Image 1 (cartoon, helix red, strand yellow):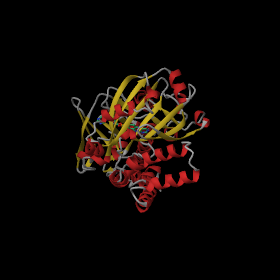
Image 2: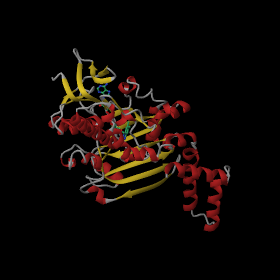
Image 3: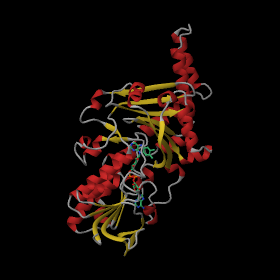
Image 4: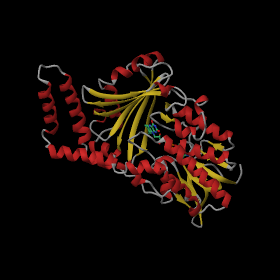
Amino acid sequence: MADKFDVIVVGAGPAGTSCAYTAAKAGLNVLLIERGEYPGSKNVMGGILYRKQMEEIIPEFWKEAPLERPVVEQRFWFLDKESMVTTSYKGLEWGKEPFNNFTVLRAKFDRWFAGKAVEQGALLINETVVTECIVEDNRVVGVRTDRPDGDVYADVVVLADGVNSLLGKSLGFHKEWKPDEVALTVMEVLNLPKKTINERFNVADDQGVSVEIFGDSTQGLLGTAFLYTNKDSLNIGVGTTLSGMIKKKLKPYHLLEYVKEHPMIRPYIEGGETSEYLAHLIPEGGYKSVPRLVGNGVMIVGDAAQFVNAIHREGSNMAMSSGKMAAEAIVRAKELDDFTERTLDSYRKELYNSFIGKDLKKYKDVTHTFEEHPQYFTDYIPMMNKAANSFFTVDGSPKKEKQSRIIKSITEGKGKIAVAKDLYRAWKVMK
Ligand code: FAD
């Protein structure tokens, strides 16, 4: 192994591998270090991989990547105890090239993706933990690993070590994340025959469905549950902010059991055999929690930098794009032979001008607002279910009377002004 690399990337998730792939493709000497037995062995995701950002790295990747199903339908379920209001979009065009997004199992996908970085010339070392960055003269010059003689040097170290970025924290780039800056998510992979999945979700073999579930699925806490179709299995999971779980004294596995037993969900998963049980944090602090991104000889990408858009369930795509942008900034720095913060900062500027910076900014107050005002989950979703029940029940009352009864029930106990304020607040943080 060379003593000095152009780039050391810590972590072979989507962010790290994108960075390693892009830098190696541009001819740089890249070392990719992963603590797991293989890339993906420790990684968790609900399972939606977005085509656009992945294609910008590997065109037409779907022809060879280990994908599950192209998603042709996005459903939203708003649950009460024994009812749900649903809405969805199904588009058969999403089932054809160039597709929209896919379900994936990370253990397979990450391993394949890291293999592509290796094909480009990156050196991948598994089962190796980076314990700290080596800093000399206010500049990161390499990393210390848990291997004997485990110090390795590089012009730039890219921290792609995920949400618990201990390395970013030890460099002082951010503090320990607070419980309202992360969501705790638990999920299971349930094996079911392909035919059963197709019948229950009304799809063909090569079509997938993603379901986002709000309301009773999180027992009034800010968060969502999800149900995604793989080829021969389903991914079911639920996540809420850690602060919410602490406040309500809820255990994550209790939440998941509750979701699995919900009468609206149980029929879809019945008979499924658990093949994996996983828990992981998701960074959900948003724009205001993004840490310092660049230092002398060092950059942070992906979850380690809080790049997740919880409203649109996007994380892996932000990880990939940020990794790619970081690599491109390193290639520019290499041309100048200058790896100072000033030069590498082009990454930060490009990132804030991209969809990542713009989307994080757009939703900068969402998490905190909805956590401070739980009525959107505790009151309005049950209200919506009751209104639908009342509207669709044929009980002999004239429709006009029924309409005014429904409108009255919405403001009942709260008052019109409070409801108007809630609506305005929601519009303001989402607009
Ligand atoms: P990670 O994928 O966490 O990768 C970090 C890598 O670094 C890991 O391989 C880890 O082993 C390695 N590592 C960490 N520390 C060290 C160290 N010290 N030394 C060496 N290696 C180290 N996003 C979506 O786009 N769609 C979804 O449907 C979706 N659903 C989700 C559901 C759940 C339950 C969760 C938890 C997340 C979900 N996300 C989703 C978010 C998405 O998974 C992340 O945004 C994405 O994985 C971030 O990629 P990353 O490379 O930054 O970090």
